[in-house]
Length: 306
Image 1 (cartoon, rainbow, N blue to C red):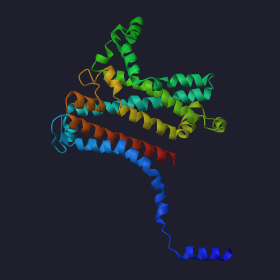
Image 2 (image 1 turned 180 degrees about the vertical axis):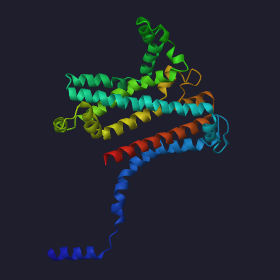
Image 3 (image 1 turned 180 degrees about the horizontal axis):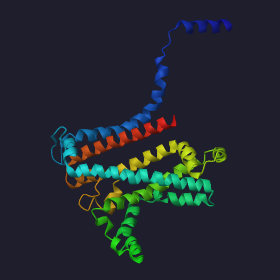
Image 4 (image 1 turned 90 degrees about the horizontal axis):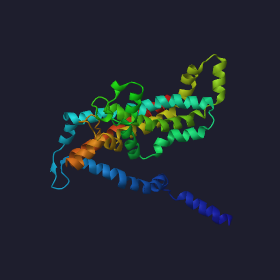
């Protein structure tokens, strides 16, 4: 038995081994997921990029126009305004909720509020409700005879009442505030989860050194939840740039084009104007914008954590 074993071992040592199989094994396991991802994500994206090079109404033969649809993104004033509005929504959907969430999560975590789980559920509730329902509810609040104007009249501020979603100046901030209300709960819950992992000894040491609540917040709390801030910013920025249902139900891109955003322009051009190629160009550009902003946010978050 020993002799046969030694003979087999010697044969194995003398036979050349192909090491490529071991290197390919992980990719073989990844292949099914990659095929599904390619079928439902990469192929539609590539198809959209292909359609963006044509002038097509969705019915007749398409005409190749090259990059003309992308040139329209720069020369068309409505499209330029749509992308600027999307960047404004980044402030309301992402920046403002993160600032509010940091303060709110810090207070709730440090104050040891009773019934915290119930409060956390209530704060997170806007994420559970369908956006169409949220939009309809807020449209009633912003109506000329809605709750907001009724409240302003009750406290003697009749001069401030207006048709909020029909005002060229206030319609965009009014819709943006809805985004802030929706995103703040998600951000607060994420940050509370991160703050719960901070050792209490850090705060005790800071107090012994004479640090106050504000110094503790900026020196201990904020640096400790950088990873959670990065995740929150990524999720909310993506949500802000691709929002459609909120715009469609509340203001429909109006009045005029004061609340139009790229995702709404994709719908409008493809299904109302019959400009499928132009809509595809807007969609591809929006996808690249979301990717680049997410990449920058995550890169800054990784550098801050290291």
